Amino acid sequence: MQEKNNHKKNIVLLVLPEVQLLDVAGPTDVFTAANLLNVSGFGYKVHMVSGTSEKIIYSSSGMPLICSHTIYDIDFPIDTLLVAGTELKVLGEITSDLYHYLQNRITDVRRIGSVCVGAFVLAEAGLLKGKQVTTHWKYADILQRNYPDLKVNINPFFIKDQQIYTSGGVSSGIDLALALLEEDFGKPLASEVAKHLVLHLKRPGVQTQFGNALPDYQMLSSFTKEVRDWLKDKLEQPISIENIAESMNMSVRNFSRVFLKESGMTPGKFLEKMRLDQAKNMLEYNDISIELVAEKCGFGSVVSLRRLFLKYLSLSPAQYRKNSKSTE
Picture 1: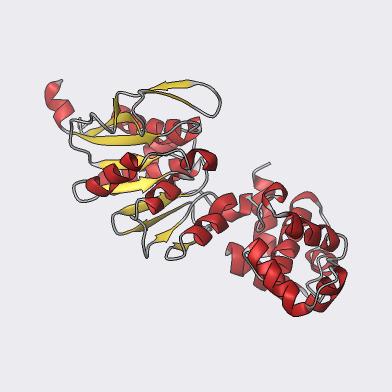
Picture 2: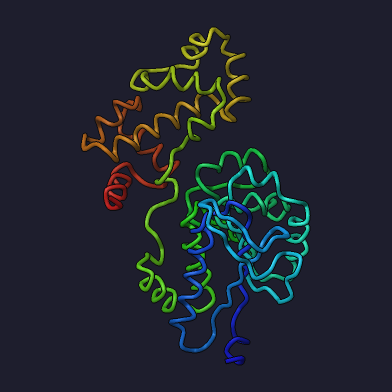
């Protein structure tokens, strides 16, 4: 038995207060299922490690997680370290000890990565500079704005850039774990694990098909909300920046400057994404023609609608509708 344990790669799942259970449980189930199905005896030993001084971490659902170690007492070599996600508000409570720990580990860990909002932790530790990364679609704009040297792409469920791996929202940690398993032991075992867990080995579609192009309404500034409220019933009409500025009793120049500062994007980009979100909603919940969707969302033509879908989702409107229906 001891000999078999020597063949196991140590996987650390680094957890913080208010972690989402699936961020931890999803990858854990992939790695432990690999142990069950890999008759060679090679596999993984999964450790939950606290990013604080406390070994009991309370998840976002209130369920306590009992960690075997904290970052202050790890006494074994690590093959792969994954930072699980948490609530954004928790990130402001993290001590510098965690970032120093990650900075010191980067040289002796074979792979380091994140699940969901865990990308913010790696970014703050300075490990993602210049890297192609992803995170939960809802927080991608914030990640890009806070760390402008990153190249944030929210389409993939996970991204590998050298030894750094980042995954998208919540369940994307499972996609990442399956990919790591395939790297280590090959596609046959990874496929067996996916079947065992009733999952796709490579999930079809892209992460952004599950979310909105724009941040949630409650995350917008009051000024941005006011603009959005004015626009929401007018998307079918031709709209210019002059129209919006006039409705706000502002000059075009002043409106554009203030809006960029408040929203992090130009008025034109905001309008484009707002129309995209409406088109996605109509394709998902209505059976009207794609031509009519394009018209009602103010695109002018199906060609313009298709171009925008390919730009943001890497899917055509027809493919998006098909994928959304298949998940019902």
